[in-house]
Amino acid sequence: MFLLPIKNKRAIKNNQGLGNPYTTTRIPVTVLFVYPKLIEALLSIEEDFFKFPLTKEKRKITIYYCPKTSSRNYNPPPLNDSATSTVKKTDSTLYEIQLAMAQATRPIDYYVHFKIYDNHKLNNAEDPVTMFASTMRTLLADIAATVTQARIDNLHKGALLAKKPMVKRQRFQPFCKRQQYTISTDTYSSNTTTALSTSAATIEANSNNITSDC
Image 1 (tube, rainbow, N blue to C red):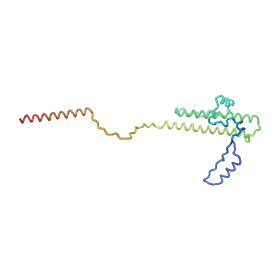
Image 2 (image 1 turned 45 degrees about the horizontal axis):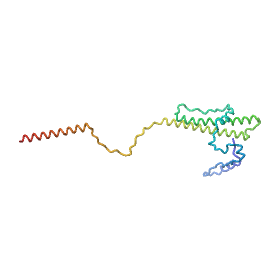
Image 3 (image 1 turned 60 degrees about the horizontal axis):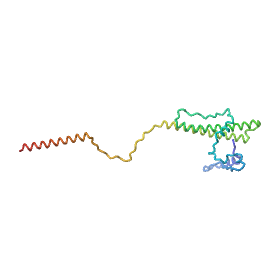
Image 4 (image 1 turned 90 degrees about the vertical axis):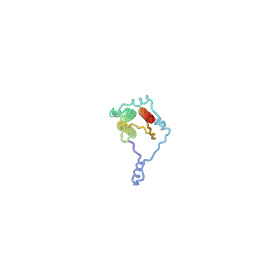
């Protein structure tokens, strides 16, 4: 892998001995300015890195021109079949990203193979090109491992949501309803009939008393 310049390493080592708990040591930021020769060497260096996809034909030529490495597993770990459809949909996208990164290591491996094949006395520990290839391979593997963890977290999140009981929402009434008194029709009819009967009996009794007095 690439090593920091000796000057930067010494500066970091000296700062670590300050013993100040309120200071944080950071690697100095170095900016590489683009110049004509660099643009000629790397044609896409001025393109938007996140909006510069290859066509399918160019991708096939770049990747499948290089053979697979025998020790490399190019297939990401499969997902549990018991996962929900939502989890599977998200996992499918992450799976394709991992697969693309694994395939991207094929040109790196093949290039280093040609370097060794052309020069059997090549010292891989000191060759800057070999060190660069190893660094890029390691970075791709690190990103792929990060995506693997994202897939695991997505699976666990889906499992928790599936086990969570569905709570029935109750309708919230912000104001109290006025109390209403209702009398059924049958009760009203019965009470009315009883009242009329009582009144008729009273009138008849009074009439009989008046007749007897006469």
